Length: 216
Image (tube, rainbow, N blue to C red; front, side):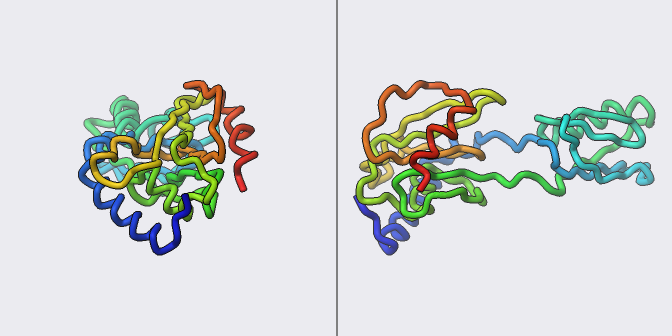
């Protein structure tokens, strides 16, 4: 199956239009961004602006604020980080009002490897499905096997969940249930031949070794 540039653009527009309604609920439930080391956070205190700070999350996930000391924010959403700062600040300040703003962070991304025209890593600027990701990577090569797309999704620091999806015959809204909404960090593998012995979970350390032979 080979998708030309013109056909790929037309198909992309069709898929995006249909996905807007068919995937509305799935995309709306997409996890919020969680703070990571090297993210930059601005903390503002409404009534005591002299305590305002812009800080970088350290490798251990901790930030240091002059008014409260150390706070671990790694893995928190912005709202959870704000609540953590508010709780500690309340030990020293009278009914503080705190705003936490994410100033710089790891940009959401996904990767596509295997038998697509332009494999690589792509910035996730908007909600994206697996089919859209393939089309953004130039579409399937002639020998691709779209009926067995593999999606690797990190679920913790050690393990990735492995999903198998069939994108072979997505032509109208009634078949969009075969597609999935991607999350930041997802990796798609488009194989040439049928893959066997695919486990539901895989060690993260093994994902790269599994994808690299197809990453050309």
